[in-house]
Amino acid sequence: MKRSKIYMVMIAAVLAVGFGCSSLYAQNWDTAFGNPGIAGDVKALAVDGSGNLYAGGNFTTVGVVGANRIAKWDGSAWSALDTGMNGYVYALAVDGSGNLYAGGNFTTAGGVSVNYIAKWDGSAWSALGSGMDSDVHVLACDGSGNLYAGGIFLTAGGVSVN
Image (cartoon, rainbow, N blue to C red; front, side, top):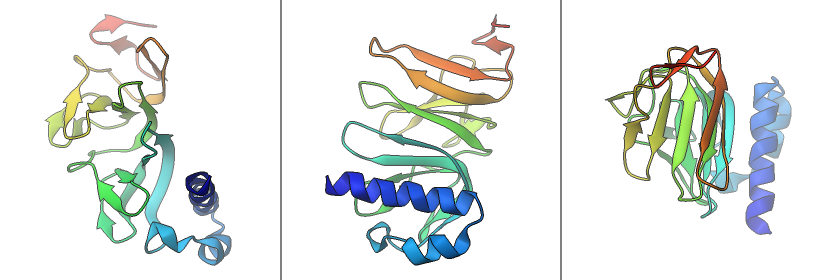
């Protein structure tokens, strides 16, 4: 219950920043999240089975931690996911095994060449095949372990999908 309340405060603060409500943001920041602020836009949030909160968007700092467009809140501190992405993160999804998927307008994740979509296994980024040919805007995982993606791409893994 306490973790849910903290996440709701975080989501409200993120939404307040995203809509330019800086006075609401500053007045209601829960100090459990460390120093206030994500320096930039948050475009996506996801929570894994362990209760870790992931944030993606166009930012380079969360609290006092440097994080390139993606970060994790473990309930007590923010951390970067390797060196992050070289472009916007628009979508996040977590599968039943705890893998995090990120989609957006980026071509590298943690220094690995990826095309608009990548997988974080808890310690390293990897590409999903040859990726997409343009931006991924939404991701979803089902109970069978399938990953679904939507966006403005015409190919996925080299296959036409339009």
